[in-house]
Image (cartoon, rainbow, N blue to C red; front, side, top):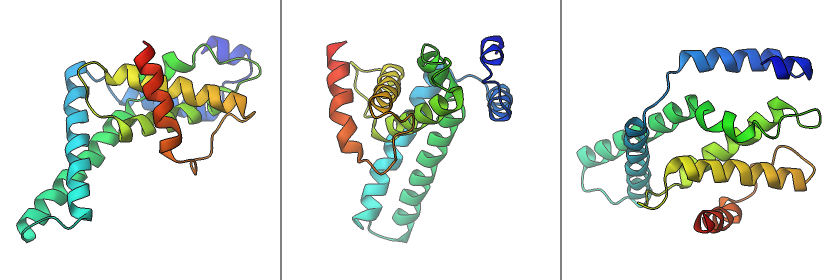
Length: 168
């Protein structure tokens, strides 16, 4: 915070983010795994609902509840996303890169990591999210913009993230 104040980057939005961080407790690794499982189940249920692969109204209701639980899990991890975002953007903050812009780009990357992550024994979500954040920030520097428009397809980024993870 002191560094951000000396660089003139301490803003009202940063104060709001810091306050939000205090409201959301840290998640344990087991809690993150449980939330990721709910996200995966919700994603699967959403595909079944979209394809109308349910037998009756009860099954449709159960699938809808799974989708809702998955969306709640995404929100929970997003609320505690600073756990992943702060370490990833710390090296980039400086006079030429505003904290708020970096945070927005990193938040977008974290959301994309959440919706594309598929549990693999060889890939922890923490590593996957960090690679997504670093990749999106690096690409935004190359594009001379700190925020990459959300209109780009996830398919453009997913192979690059998978390649970086295979190199680790």
